[in-house]
Image (cartoon, rainbow, N blue to C red; front, side):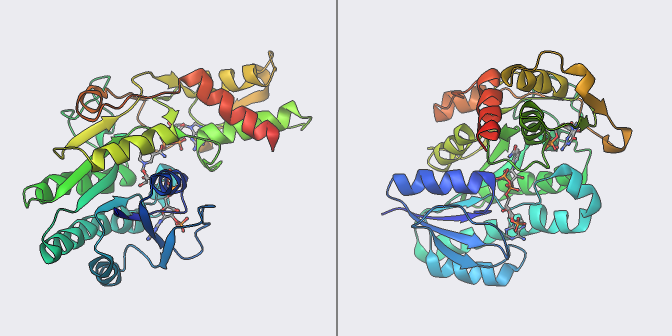
Length: 314
Ligand code: NAP
Ligand code: GDP
């Protein structure tokens, strides 16, 4: 039986990944971080810990000797990374690389292949010169989150050089009803649902012109599993290839909720505009299509619709 180890189990992707692996009959172990809210995934064996406590995590990994390791733990909010750049560097950067070293030690100890997937991010490209971006796009992050993810991303290649199967999955924004409202998509859908059900307030956003490539989170989790099991490890952009602005997202959400005259309900607060914010991140996932047989299954309108419906249902 395949044994997997997941970090970041309490997050959006961790829950979907655990459900997916359990359904396949995989034995799932996970690092449970402090007060992290845990998914409803009976069957996951939880081990409390913190990714930055490198020696403890290494001892745990050597003990479990998993076949697949999925590193999803992160300070995943760019906005938060500006306030905690040092912690972001530790969790998203050095601790991720330490996990690669631990996986290599497991592989050497047990004498058979360990497969590690690192959740990288489009933010490693910062303010790119080209759209869409692919695996060859220049790495030039513009915020502490992207810089820390870039360090782990580059280290994946270092560990491939040491014969570890490490995939760096360059994930573009992916969303679901499980996304916290600290991210713009869920902030929009939860506020629109409140407005549609009688709340007398306003939707206050920052940069309405930023363009992102938003996909459906379970599709991206599917890509992570395919990447772990690929014949040859490498870097893979995981994206839909279609960009929309924050304004487009708001418009689609209001449409779904049946509110036509929405523009007067939205404000842009300069205080919510970031010190540096990529204006357009859209990915070309051709390599993942070709080598992993991966493709997104949910388009933009459907994604927004599912999130709005879930918030109306709440
Ligand atoms: P998420 O919901 O924020 O989940 C991340 C999890 O990591 C949280 O449950 C968090 O627990 C945990 N964590 C933080 N610090 C930790 C530590 N020191 N030790 C152990 N666990 C720790 O993120 P997500 O949306 O599922 O994303 C999964 C991964 O994909 C992340 O690495 C993210 O950066 C990357 N990614 C996501 C997107 C996206 O659009 N979702 C795009 C690109 C890349 P606490 O709450 O206790 O801190
Ligand atoms: P990110 O791409 O991982 O940083 O995901 P977010 O959902 O936090 O932000 C996506 C884009 O929406 C960025 O360009 C933000 O600047 C922009 N944005 C505009 N208004 C808001 C807001 O009120 N909250 C957040 N989180 N982002 C906003």
